Length: 229
Image 1 (cartoon, rainbow, N blue to C red):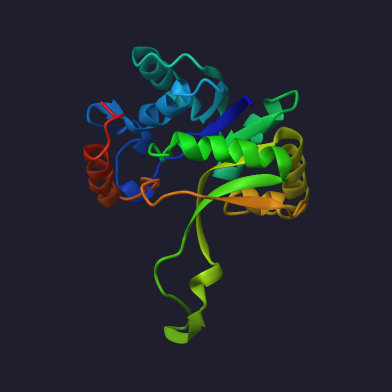
Image 2 (cartoon, rainbow, N blue to C red):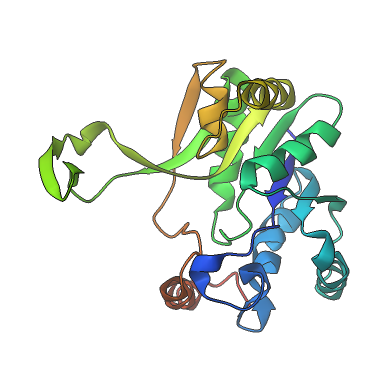
């Protein structure tokens, strides 16, 4: 089954400490966001990529996309102040039905098998999210003191992509806007109107490039993969 993917790419990534949008930083001579777009460019099931961007960067982003031969981008839509606002702008512009994925532009290492599983699960549930089991011990604390240890056996660290039927995603975003609710991911919005969201277990390589240290991890991941040039 085909799908469309929404990729918010308007943030500045202040924690990266870069003087420009972190997505324009390069890994092996290729911008981070191009590595991410290539995942969906290669996938025959992907019917279109929809980017939320900073309008001031549109010319540069369009030029880089053309340079690297990505031809599945269907729309460039101005982003908002926060990630949630950017995604809202894009999904309001989408029409029809079908499965929509939302994916972080700074996660270039998602694997095809996980995309396939997400799309499949989203057809039969209210949504599907990619996640990995929490490995570290998790403590609850307040004012610098430990209050207790949380049982991690049921805890998952959530990644993207996340997959939903378009109508469900639009309804969730409309309710969030009406209620002035800000969530930390798309599923947190959908959970407020639907409760059957499936897990797809991913892997720990699917990191979000957020801090300068993450670039070193990214290089290590690239070194062990054959599908990145």
